[in-house]
Image (cartoon, rainbow, N blue to C red):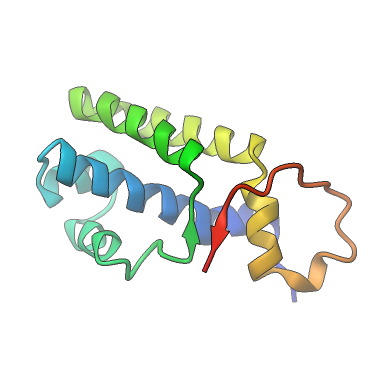
Amino acid sequence: MYYLPQEIEVWYIIPAIRRELSKELVKKHKMTLEMVGNALGVSKAAISQYLSKKRGGSVKLAEKIKNEIKISANSISENKTEAFHEIMRLLRICKTEGVSCISCRKFNKEVLDHCKMKPHHYDIDLK
């Protein structure tokens, strides 16, 4: 059994992005869990799980991506309707940085011998 790159994004990368956004929005921008949940399209319980690393803790994003997340958090704190567009922007950055390929090394080893994609960045820490 193997995972498609899109499944890696849905199960690991999007939760990691939401985790980092949640941390920024709650700690730096002083938003409530409910406000962050509404902005990110998830429940306040999900935000609580992101903050306690029960969700989204499988992938640790590189500093370059975390810096982009800070920019996104600033935008979202000013206009909560921007969250959708900011998450899409962050996913595009993750794709260019090869985060899916890097995550595949950890979660999808069965397909690595057959994969034709050539990851070009390895600036990510895997637990």
